[in-house]
Length: 153
Image (cartoon, rainbow, N blue to C red; front, top):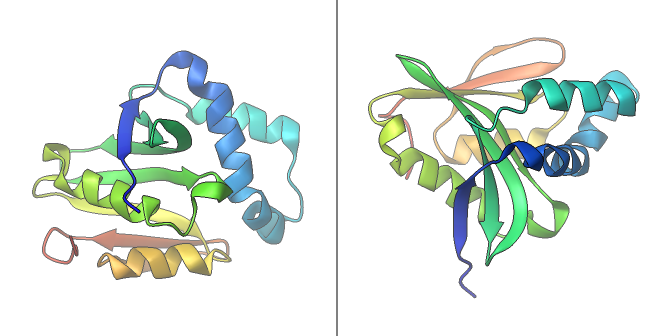
C-alpha cells in the first residue's frame, strides 16, 4: 500500500504537537539514558528547540505523523530531529522523509550530520542503511555523518 508522505512547514502553534511527538518517540530512550522523563524540563526544552523556520510536520495521507528539523550551515546540514508517532514507525515513513531531505536542494553537496542517543540502536541501524557512519561518541550519544558520496538514496 502506497503512502503519500509530505513535509509541511511548521507553524508556531505546532509546538504542542512537536512535544507530543517528541515524548512518544523519545521518552523510553530518555528514561533509559537519564533515568526519568521530567515533564517540566521536557516542555521547556521543547519550547526552546522548536523553531518553525527549521521544523516541518510529517504528514502521511494527510494525517500528522511526526516532525523533522534541520539546520543548514555552509558546509553541512544538521538533522536535529526525525521523530514519528508510534503508529507511523516501521512502515517506511522515516525512509521516505530521509530520501525527501536528501533530494532537497538544501542538501546538495553537503554532508548531513546528526546525533542519536546511544541506547537507541534501532535509529543507529536506520541511519547506517542510508550511509551514515559514526564520527564520535559520548557516554550518552552517538554522532553520525553521511557525506554526499556516502549517502544511499
